[in-house]
Length: 490
Image 1 (cartoon, rainbow, N blue to C red):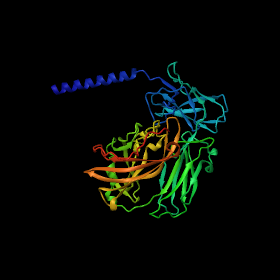
Image 2: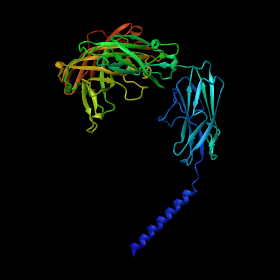
Image 3: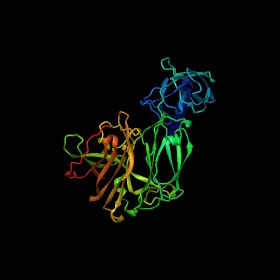
Image 4: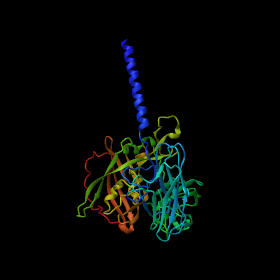
């Protein structure tokens, strides 16, 4: 009897709860629906694009555009899931040349289901001469229950104005170094990026490049897209001699419309090859991908204070392996991803490491303590990609198989570093030294770095370094030489 009574009580409670839920649902106010421009830009006046999100920005009602790449203007509809497609029409007005730009879609946006954002793509067909204004305005909605603009009179965002300001177009190489095997017919591709967009008719290969060729090849442009151009090099020479270093340099020339920034010299090389036992895997002593804060620790012999006293100063840099293909001569398996499928296997170079930031391109690490070399350096990866050097060091074990000592090479390359004043310079780096396991698991590297630039340094500057794979090391012995570096102004 008690069991039946309890069951009836539970059933009654469930019915009452369901009844209340139904009543509350039916009486809940319907969320107002409204449509508005939802254009966001960060503190550097760079538009945010999906999937970039931030809760700290307020949608803009106007934007000053200095780029000729396609501008994406999002329009957002706040609503419950749509049962039917909603169409929103908009108008466009300009006080200048209407052939400068084109819009897609031309005059109508659409929203359906849970797709509650559509985008107006503003493409630029040519350069504008005078400052110009383009005003977009939301005009009508196919669903009368949808309000145009925010539900306030302060920031309705029912119009959006694009102010066309002074154009600033740049170009850069996304990488500064490419290695080739050296076979006749070998193909490699490289890109030229245009962060602010470009107009195809303004780009002529003969005018944007300067060549310093160390071997014969054919250069062809194979792709044009929104962000840049892709070129292909086909080797016409057999340059597989293991004992010879081959190099070709391709540099960007500033033109009337485009200014070089970041990496302005691309180095294409066939390095010297030395037989080494990959099972030694020297590089694995200098990285730990399971620790996002892993760094190597260095000392630089310097007089940064310019007081006539040379001393060691410490620094650190985020250190990473060099990912290579399975077919690379120095490839060693790092991770099979827990599968039997070799297609997803990850291989690392057994004898190379690099320094780079684990964060976005706007930051950099402190390769070779170079940030201390200068008094006014820009640390942005966009301006000073040379603070991230990847690859940077190469190990050559003694007799090709020693696990405790050998020689090291600073991989010769050109790096770009800029000042906060906008000046940008290319530096050639090179150097060599030795490494040795000085106690169990602790490696010490002793080397000299050569940095060359005529404008800033007056030629080549050579500096002494120590580098360790841990921060638990004894202070290095003082050097007897006064060959120590001071600060330079960019």
